[in-house]
Amino acid sequence: MNETLTTADGRPALRIERRLAHPPGKVWRALTEPEHLSRWYPFTATELDLRLGGLIAFDDGRGTVMDAVITELDPPRRFAFSQRAPEGMARESEDLVRFELHPEGEGCVLVFTHVFDDRFAAASYASGWQVCLDALSAELDGAPPEVRRPSAESHDAYIERFGLDAGSAEETADGWQVRFERQLTRPAETVWTLLTGGSRTDAPEPAVGGPVPRGFTAEDIPPGEVTAAERPAVLVYTWQSAGRTAGRVRWDLSPGTGHGARLVLTQTGPEEADTERGTALAAWRRRIAELAAQLRELP
Image (cartoon, rainbow, N blue to C red; front, top):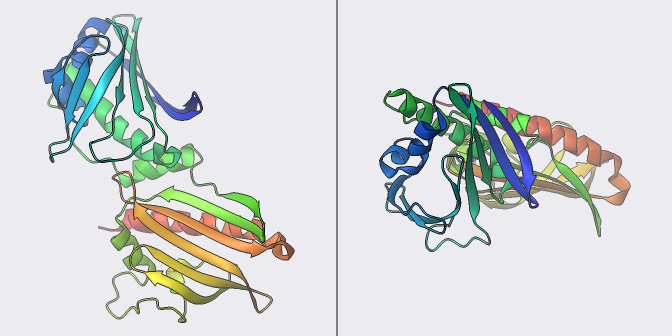
């Protein structure tokens, strides 16, 4: 399977190619007939009006219903639909899911594309679609599709493959800011517990004016004191340079794409500490990679 993260009309686009030992006509039925589609797709297709502009209704099995509109239909070559957000969830645009079938020998090549907005969700989508396309292959082979959760190892491998572990740096009115955003593989509460001392029952909870728990720090970034703390969502503290407060470090944990929490980490610094900006980029990249590895090792 060949996976790449690219762009389409300025939006992130995940592209996956997979060779299948089945002719396009058979694969087409697995893509467009609800009883087959529901066996390998993430959601159950409760309704599918197979025409251009036709509606598809998906049910996640937990009471959430999502609608989609067929945007391309060229049997047995192209099938695409725009997937709407669930009712009550605000989203500026819709995801686009597209399937292309190219004959090859006695089988075909499936080209799958998912266009979305949240670039930092790409690893979650890639690892999830990998599981789904494995299930599609099983369905085509006549074997029971395996329903399983994407592994943290697969997820984090895509993080590195797509370059989603790299931070960014920008100039600000007061100096500079380094920023990292990463989808994690455990819920915020689990991440917070690990950062504040793991399974230790005597690990102190961070408090304003108190010391910074070691888990929230990085090598070469001397911590000052906590200035804000809200379990399990926010921790802010000052950092030191030459014995003086130079800026702040902020950890934000929020709901992510289903794997776990979304981490946004920022560090600010003054213009005169510009050389420390590069230090911050390297130090936090290492620290967040270490955190991801620790989360993968949890039972």
